Structure formats: C-alpha cells, structure tokens
Amino acid sequence: MLPHVILYNAVSLDGRITGFNADIELYYDLVSKWDIDAVLMGSNTVLTGLGAEPGEIREEDLESLVNREKDPEDLRPFLVIPDSKGQIRIWDELFKMPYLRDIIVLCSKATPEEYLDFLKGRDIDYIIAGEKYVDLKGAMERLNSKYGIRSIRVDSGGILNGVLLNGGLADEIHLLIHPELVGNINESSIFISNDLNPLNNTIKLKLVHINKLKDDIIWIKYDIIK
Image: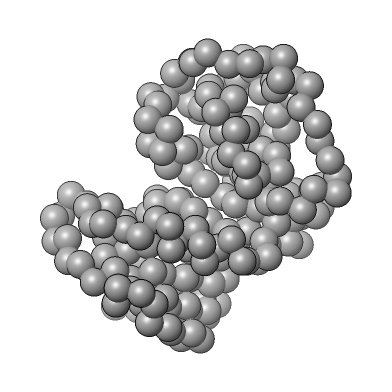
C-alpha cells in the first residue's frame, strides 16, 4: 500500500522556488499543524540546506548517534532521504533537528557497500529499492509496511517532485504563492521534467482550497487527478 503524498513548496508568482524572499516562518508554521508520518527530502536539498558538499564529512558525536533512544511511541515524523550515491555523511547535524523522530535513508542495489556500512555504524535505518537508482514506489510501499508510514510531506525541489509526479505517486500539491516575480531562466521551478508532452500529457489538478494569508501570500491546494 502506498502512503498519501503531499508536495509542498513556497513559490514566487511565476513558479520559482529560489530567488525571492520566502516567508520561512509562515511556511513551517502551516505544516506544524499537519498530521503526517514522514517528511521526504531530496539529498541535494539536504546538502544545500546544511551548506555541505556531496560526501563531505564533519565532526560528529558518534557515541550519541549510536546510543540515541528510539521510542516507538514518538509521534514526530520520520525524515526520509533518497541517497543511492552515498552523498550525505553529516547525519549528526540532521539528528539535531527537534521535530524529527528518526531518519530513514532510501538506497538502491548500486549504493556502495561502504556507504551502507557507514549508515549501520550510526544505527541509521535504510531501505534498498531499485537497481541503479531508488525505486520510489517500491520504497514507499516498504515505508508503509515496515514503519506504518501512511502520509508523507515532500519538502524538496523540482527534480524529486518531477519523479513523484511522473510516477503517479503524488496525491496533493500545496503552494504558498508569494507576490514576487523572479523571471531568471536559471532559477528552479517546482516541477522539473523532460517526459511530458504539453499538448496531451499534462498532469491535471482539481482546486480544493485557496486562502489569502499575510502580506498577500496565497495558500493554494490542489488534488492531483490520476
């Protein structure tokens, strides 16, 4: 069984996710009230957020990582990160986030054994799904069956959003539309994909919620028509 997947992004009026003054406090204040089981975040988003390079290793408290308490009654969401290439090595910093229950890494059969040992040495759970890259559908089925994850919020960029949308794995889209125009062709959008024919293969949406918030920011929600 697949979890219910919600894509969530703050955007400019022209659909960019960078290059404008996003209201981060409002962004996280809204989602703090959502009842979700996990947050799915792309590895590039994690590295950018922590100002780290792929494969970078920083000082860590290994003893605290290995001996951290895992409470089955903890109601905070898991953090789920696809990382088949083994790029993230700064897990100690992620575990300092107070709103996370634990971390699950999504790997593939091509993930280096050395990286899997790296995760084991820090008592970090991982799921292997897919050959060269992570099979997100198979991984999500495992997240549901093994960890009881029934709902996921995706906090990531256009590449991961694109994979989820093209795979029919996303169910809702929530956008905080900011009253700014970015324009630059090099700025990222919420949906990056080369697979769609804009004439006959677009993804159809149904509007289910719209609300004007502070500073003329619009919160809009669509269901994805499958």
